[in-house]
Image 1 (cartoon, helix red, strand yellow):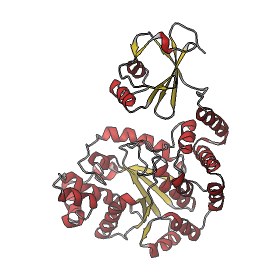
Image 2 (cartoon, rainbow, N blue to C red; image 1 turned 90 degrees about the vertical axis):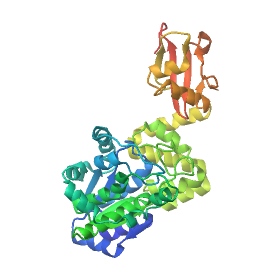
Image 3 (spheres, rainbow, N blue to C red; image 1 turned 90 degrees about the horizontal axis):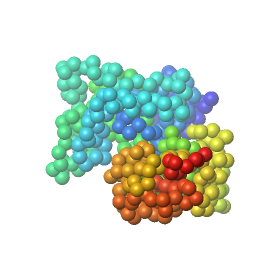
Image 4 (cartoon, rainbow, N blue to C red; image 1 turned 135 degrees about the vertical axis):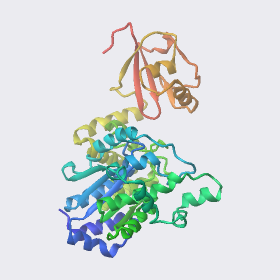
Amino acid sequence: MLSNEILVQEIRKIAIQIIDEERLLKKLNTKKAIVKMGADPTRPDIHLGHTVVLRMMRKMQDCGHEIVFIIGDYTAAIGDPSGKSKTRPALTIEETRASGQTYFEQVIKILDPAKTRIVYNSEWLEKLSFREVISLMSKYTLAQLLEREDFQKRFQNEQSIGMHEMLYPLVQGYDSVAIHADIELGGTDQTFNLLVGRELQKAYGQEPQTVITFPLLVGLDGKQKMSKSLDNYIGIDEAPEIMYEKAMKIPDTVLEEYFRLTTDIPKEAYIHWLHEDIVEAHRRYAAEIVRLYHGEAVIADCRARYESVAKGQNPKDMPCFLCPTLEIPLVTLLHRHGLIASNSEGRRLIQQHGLSLNGCKMTDTAKIITENDFVQGEMIVKLGKNRYYRFVIATQTHP
């Protein structure tokens, strides 16, 4: 178990900012600190970018502190305006609850489920009367809210800002009041919201939380922050072979940050690999990520699959599907098997050169499957960078 002193040193190594740092160690040493992290379940997949904060929470948990992971089913119904140039569509409570369940199943891959309190903020927010909401709004001014960079830009560009969006940072901040948070962790894109929590705690007569912000992990494009919407992410719930292949494609220029922020491998080890053999550094990182989220046993198979694909070979363990009939549009076939969400998505993939048939990039969005598309009785479809599928004609026997 780490001591609180060593824990603070670990935090300093990674954190971008510690607000009220002088009280941090005192809080950790004098009580079982309540450590808060919140997430809106608008996109239920947790990726490596989220683990930068989650892994630090696990270290704090191992030091005996109470971890409260707040799933913002009510705040997601508003929509976080952070970095957005327009109002986000609201989600229903049912939608946020469904996503929240998948969040829970994923965060316990990192946090100790027996020591983690996972709550929905509807537990206290839906109980607020309108009078209490007005009281909450009175704790903050419009001028303070317009200090948010995204609100400033939209206001200056004469873009609409919904009144409900103004409530978002207040409602998220009120979560800290509701659970009496001592410490709150988040990415740098959440700094404003976390500071609102401090101010509201003061207004409600509580000691303000210490705020710790962490860097945003760059995505697989090497440019923008990791995000599912940008398709530049590695999800912790993805299949191990997909994780391994994605990890091998991390740009060399950011691999050091991946080692530093998402693993516990000592710096002297990964610096050596990076300087001596960058390919081996990628292999080591890919193996470590797979080990963390899927276990040691599958690493060898993941590496063998990746190396065979890298040599231009098809993986041996492709899912197999039946082609019910010939003279069927390719996108219709894929849609029927649930491999794409819609025919239009399939056509878009083809237009973006993201769909291959038997190793050849498809360009014809109206492609009709014929007998000539089956080589030795099978047809290989590749979607995106790493999704392979084998099709056989329905009338023939297949393994």
